[in-house]
Structures are given as structure tokens and as C-alpha cells.
Length: 142
Image 1 (cartoon, rainbow, N blue to C red):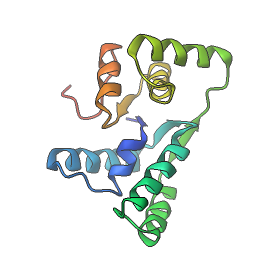
Image 2 (image 1 turned 60 degrees about the vertical axis):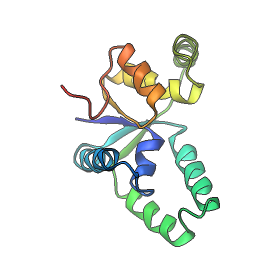
Image 3 (image 1 turned 30 degrees about the vertical axis):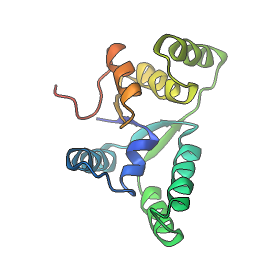
Image 4 (image 1 turned 180 degrees about the vertical axis):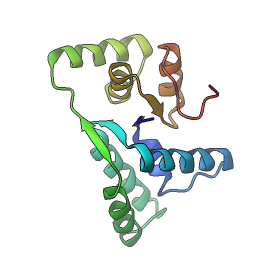
């Protein structure tokens, strides 16, 4: 099944999670993306880039490791789904207001609602908002 992939999950493929259950979930998500692909909102690439920059500044990674990660990321079938209408932006705003999410996180939730895909995230507030909206979160029991 195709998933909506948020930046926190993708970054976990590069920046190892300290919690073993989370690390295992990240590996499962990578396997799913490898097999079925992923959908992302247009802001996903800048979010991933920002996460990599912040990790590099904390010395949790370096330029060489980032370059390798970007090569690996380019091999995956990740499809950008732009918010191409005022209606989509209105839905993002409404979700942000009702769920107390940032517009960035609400963009992931809006994409989940529009596609029926499950959400792969480590953002607890976003995951809870998705569950509250009736969406599936990757790794939840069926």
C-alpha cells in the first residue's frame, strides 16, 4: 500500500532512531516505500533538506553521509502531490485550526484524507490528529 511519508520518517532512515521499536518501524516504512512508493506534499523535500542541515549542524551527520543518503533517496518512488488549488489550501487551514497543527503538518493530513493512504510519521501530534480524523497511521495495529 502506498503511504504518505512525512519528513520525520524519511530522516529516520538516515539518522538512526534511539528507540529500537521506532528504528524497526522506520525500516518497515522504508521497505514499504521501496515496494509501493510514497506520496508527499510539495513541502517534503525542503523539510527533509532542513532536517539534514540541522543534523549536520549538530554533528549528527556529515556531507559525505548526506550525499549517500540523497543518492539512496533518489532511487525511491516518491511522488509529489502539490496543493494545486485554493480549496486544498482551505482544507489545510481548516485542518490546522481544528487539529492545532502547523500548516506544514496539516498538509500531510490533508494529503492522507484526499488519497486514503496511511500516514508514516514519528510526529506524535500529527499521528494523533490523523487517528482522530479516521486515518490509519503506519505501524498501528489493523
